[in-house]
Amino acid sequence: MIYLIAFLAPLFYALSILIESFLSLDVFKKPSTMCFYTSLTNALFVPLMFCFEMPTCPHAPCFFIYIILAVIDIAYLYPYYHALKKTDTSVVSSLFALGKFFVPCLSFLILKDVLLPMQYVGFCIIIFASLVLSAKQGMFLKLNKSFYWMFLSSFLFSFRMVLAKLAIQSDGVWVNTIVYPNIISGILVFSFLLLKNLRPDIQKNMPAYKEKLPLFIVNEFVYFLAIAAATYALSWLSPVINGAIEATAPLFLLVLATIIQPFCRFQFKELQVSYAKKILCFILMIVGVILIA
Image (cartoon, rainbow, N blue to C red):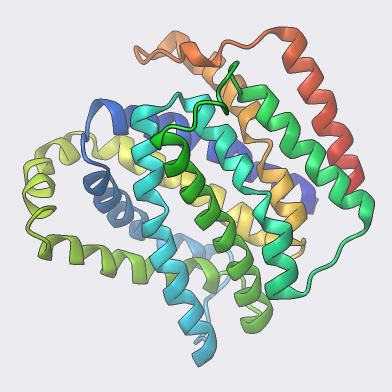
């Protein structure tokens, strides 16, 4: 059952990436403005966590970790949205998988987490399959700015996963790892209004935000489900195993894009992948999951 819940995370992450690619490209031109409204909307769903488990008062060291998690929740969005403007959706998804290579090292250094050799092999197989599924010819040879932006974002996201596991182990309550960072980031993001170079664009796009609010709410609800599934799974699984499962998002991305495309004016042309490639990567991912499980 825990693996089923873990696989809900990449499903919802993939759907969120599709929605955010539309919002980032068609609505908000500056990544900082998108960060502001995304973080603001995210905080609205904190009360939903009370349906799973009531948060507790965190220990002082854990609260410091929650502050770091909140900062990362805002910080990783800027390079992510910047990359979405310059790079195909499928490439962004694959580069998120690339960042998962940091997870075993960070997990060992911070958590002293050690897995069986075959589990590490399974992890590498899944990461490799997700990269092959999304990569275009020569994609990784062209190390442009978008590549580095996404590399930074994926590293921060991977670092966040390991810190979240540390918080869960220290605090013992998995919902705290969602509730407190979301509340803190929702407060911290108002600091954007104090910066003269950011405030005008945020104010100018307020009407656009109101117009797209239903889509924002849908996106943040989907992202909330992804975070909830990922965090609950992380409370039971190693960050390495959890990271490998999340790396299957490109496969879900292809399936969802195929389903959504007929009903959406936004074109996902970059997601056209041959059936042979899909089947090969799907088989590799299954083998990887069997090895890590």
